Image 1: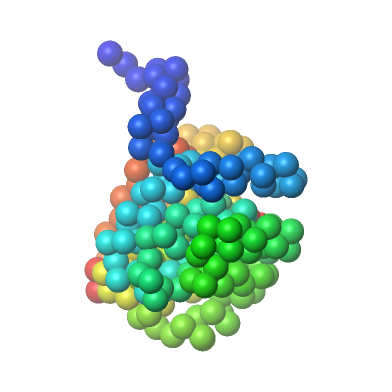
Image 2: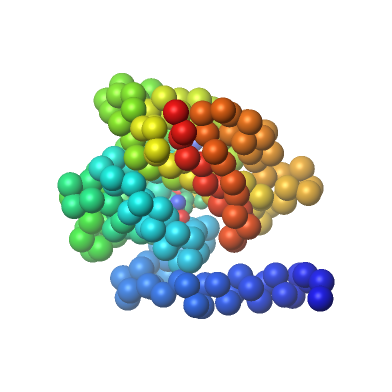
Length: 215
Ligand SMILES: C[S@@+](CC[C@H](N)C(=O)[O-])C[C@H]1O[C@@H](n2cnc3c(N)ncnc32)[C@H](O)[C@@H]1O
């Protein structure tokens, strides 16, 4: 039986239905965000759960996220971290950052989360200086797709050996897909060929790349 667009769509809904259970707080969050004028572009609940599981497989002491939006993925990540863990999440829209700050508080994870406001490429050097090399357990990249290679170059030395680098939308977005010349082909090929990393991308939602720093 061939894969069809209908079957692919069914499988996406099925995965969210079976693996995307979430609590009441997360259930209402994106509806509140959309009402407040934000786009409905957070990860799905099953991808959120994947992030939580992956972070929990690391020491979970320090994580970086690029692209906070309303705090949805950040809450999943923070919940996977150690009690003493710290998530630094970067957002260049003040309205998004203000909304996310309130949601981190409502979700009870605000003590673990610091929102850094500004364009990722402007603020990353300061973050790098603060945290230092070989300090980060987990990274989730979900900001500007055309900058994925630049983010990787700055963050790579910050990751611990054994740390995980996760990136969303590596097969595309609603605006276009990898077979149409969209997605993050250059970045995917760069990290796949990097001898310091082992990388693979799952076809969950719009493509979630998982890479482990090997040395
Ligand atoms: C896809 S949304 C993030 C969704 C979020 N990770 C989630 O799943 O809940 C992308 C966010 O990144 C922000 N953003 C886009 N480009 C950015 C940049 N260059 N620097 C910082 N934030 C950026 C946008 O304002 C938006 O809030």
